[in-house]
View 1 (cartoon, rainbow, N blue to C red):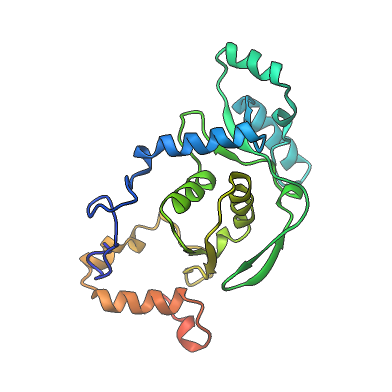
View 2 (view 1 turned 120 degrees about the horizontal axis):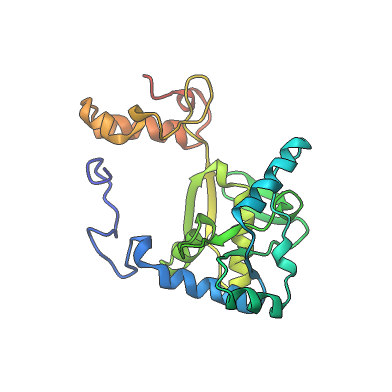
Length: 236
């Protein structure tokens, strides 16, 4: 679709490049190395909580009208307790330990932002039981290993950026610059969903839209430009 739009990536699974491989399933060793480094430094830990316990925590929070969050129980396991569970081949995930306190960073769109994520969220999972990373770990590892200088992404990731920057710090890696851009919305102001089949680029290709027309709409709607043009939507 990028090639159809006339903006082919400099590197990709099809084009190759010096920072491959470009499919995450082929980069698992990089994620495991980063997760192990975080475990070794104490910035991450193995969590053995069962899905049943996590579901119970969620139900209790909802009944109390609170936001569900992991209670960081496994953060306090001793080394001997961890080894005992590992010897029993108990399944686990790896969680990143969120430091307490507010952390600031400068976004290229929103300016200085401050978030104390540890006060509202539990420690996030960064490596799942199947050995695949969550987005939190994958984006940090991929961006650093691929020498990405600037990250432009949707504003819904603005709060999570604090977690990612904390992970960069724990790994001793310099972070890229971040810019969070407005989301494309439906007419009623709701977020576009991938369950809406007509928002896929293939739909516009099959409907005869020209690449330049689609790029014009997306640029004006999602760039953060002020004024009338920024208020257009995909229904035009």
